[in-house]
Image 1: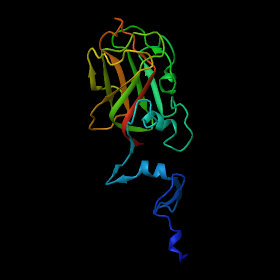
Image 2: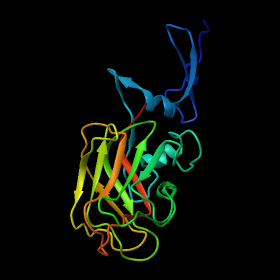
Image 3: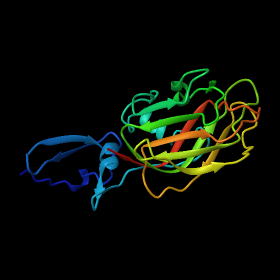
Image 4: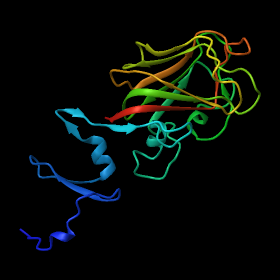
Length: 220
């Protein structure tokens, strides 16, 4: 075994680009893993530590969608649409679902049907969500969300609401963010925003530009 004589060369703090070499004691297989992925996958007492997606400001780069767009901080950012997150909606009347996570101003809306929703499935883990942010569309003032629920599910079938909005007048201009603190005792992989009444123009269109989630992300 090699003996290190100069202790001054031993690093006590790992840099982001450092690799750790791990060995499976049963099979003898060795693995190289980055600092970010090691921290994301560590377990304590059988429970995954997870990655903290902590809100700092509207449109920041700390949210889950941005984190997954960087493939858990291992590559340069790309849109996580269908590459970490799967979107769905009750219907699409304008725009595309990919625009909801592309970090750009855009115009997406559903048809005017009561109960319209935008849903998203985290394909690579679960999120114990403590905040979510939405951004109004980029053109044509009005049609702002007023009545909706932010819902979550563990299986995509049985839903609970984490936040209920009744005549919420927070959004009042184009390209405006609104952010809401919520409480969740468990991690979910399915989330959706579903209308429960009309928007500011008296229709059921759900019109948004961007969505972002925050909380503790636990990878699969």
